[in-house]
Length: 96
Image 1 (tube, rainbow, N blue to C red):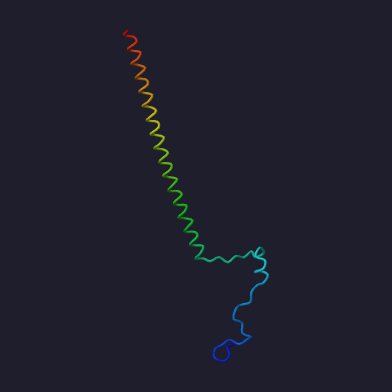
Image 2: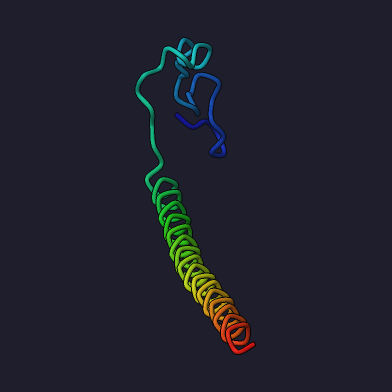
């Protein structure tokens, strides 16, 4: 009830009464109030982070596959060169 000039009187309740037990013992409160906007923002941020992690993982796997192929080709080339050198050396030794 408002008094004179729109100012609340002493016995008016401006704020709802607080639940003292819930405020002093937050561990006993099992009913949590979730802000839907905040949870949506957190969920979208989590989805973006997961998508970014998946993209980075795919790039890493692709790079690892290319690195493995590159290593295999280099090793094969070295083996062919060594075999060719051994063949050439044995051919020269047989001619003497």
